[in-house]
Image (cartoon, rainbow, N blue to C red; front, side, top):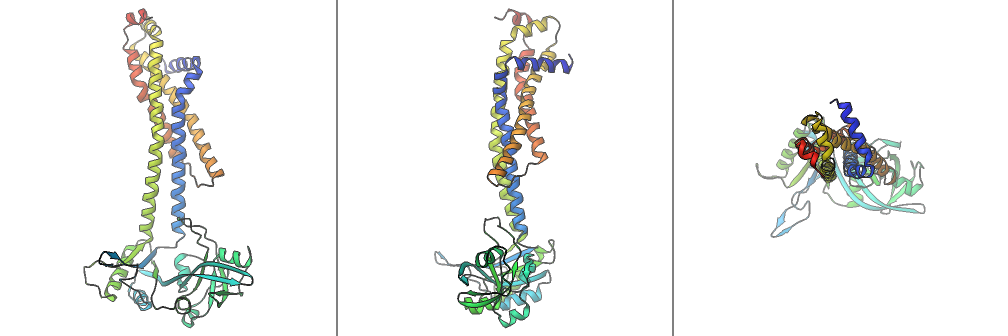
Length: 406
């Protein structure tokens, strides 16, 4: 029997019981739609996370002071190893795998100008900070090494800070702001970066010379952390090793001991984020895949009922010369027709749900061709797998017994 004949018989059989056929498809429809929508959400979240990590800068390496234990208590970060500016200069001089490095002093401060005030993060760093973060200026100019050496009271505002103090879109270059009651001259405004992967506003900061923040706002001699950029992505492991060796030597730590400070590369952060995103996508897809399994069981159930209802028909076909494989293919094509049609509807529904989530919730979603192909192929495989046993049962019926069936 030709495949076209089998397909026509299958469509006619499904059309006779439209509601039952639709309800049978429903499990496949929901399963395919859920797989596509969940994969779209997972991929979108992964891309957003990667984009956010990329916004941190180019080949970034962060160095943080560690912590130590005293009896059962674990002291605060930096209680064991404290960095000084001299350590930063030593790393800059000796680590040839680094392109830029800067100490970082971070604090919270109240900014005031005119009748407005805003509390934000103040970061003290060298001018290289903008090169490391790949953060150009929207307006104005950044501070210079001369400003750094002189401890000049100048600053660069993030877009969020500028909007809240001076109004949206206003260029505050040349204006004066008070940071913890100290007057600072605004040199410019940083380009907008948006939120990072943790949902924090990267533009809610003020950037000032390290020496100014360290001496006039914080009033201490220690460096909160270091931020560096390797000469290339491939050089990041070498750069991290060089930083570790130099700092261990300067902190007089025994060779072979564990450093009590942390060196984190952008690659490590990206790998961790990718692992989390991949695990989330896999979890969501697994949950959605259960719907496909339930849909497959529904197909098997209905096909078994169909074989029982059409026993006399099967017996008649066998009696007039149909072969067992013809009967097998007939019911297998019916099962596949149910799953494929359900798969097509599910694909359309899944893409629609993903678009709805993006429009109503503002989620980042990404429907890929591969996820559509995989979901559709899985629905076809579901029809073959769960339709095989009922079809095989129909093909093995004895014609005489089938004709006698009431």
